[in-house]
Image (cartoon, rainbow, N blue to C red):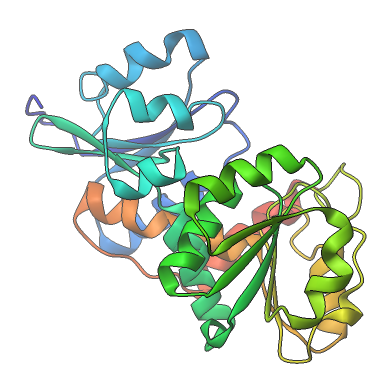
Length: 281
């Protein structure tokens, strides 16, 4: 990677990408550490993605986040680690020497947010994960890595759930939506990875009364911040983990790789992003 006299900068590559809160997060940390660096949004269409990534340093960047629709292609253009390969998507790029490496920090973002929001959640033996998309892959990988004995993957399209089960092995059980009545009473963790409950999307219709009293409920949606699922869970006295927490925690490793300091997710940072989310309603 050619040397540069400019302050180090990273970016978010997406199409579109203007809605991202990542600049708020990284600029807060840069200011906190007194680092003369930057974090930009780069709206790059699919036809321009390969050129942009292959010449990332020449565009002025020491690394990048990657979002929709580029996460899968990023694997082919970088040297992915085991996590990125297992999930089938990369969201964080950085240089080791002249080699552009990639990983998937959605895994640790999800797990670290659970640890912060519901300490001890991992005494669970069984989890129910709703949805079988890209986010679900990261969640399932993290849960298996943490040692859960059984992950029930519930999806309306049986084929997608079966494909994930085939990839991750015998501890993942693909089930249809109709199985929830049977699964929820013994699930200590329920995770929504679908868009249901997101602003502009249909609500997630599910009977949380079936969950055990000690269960934890996680929702990857963060617009709105208090989804109907989380509101209902808190109404039952269940512990919860929201999508904003995952967003904040997944950003930690990228910042450390690019700027050499490991940041913390603090109430002050969360409040900054919450204010921005409220202003955009």
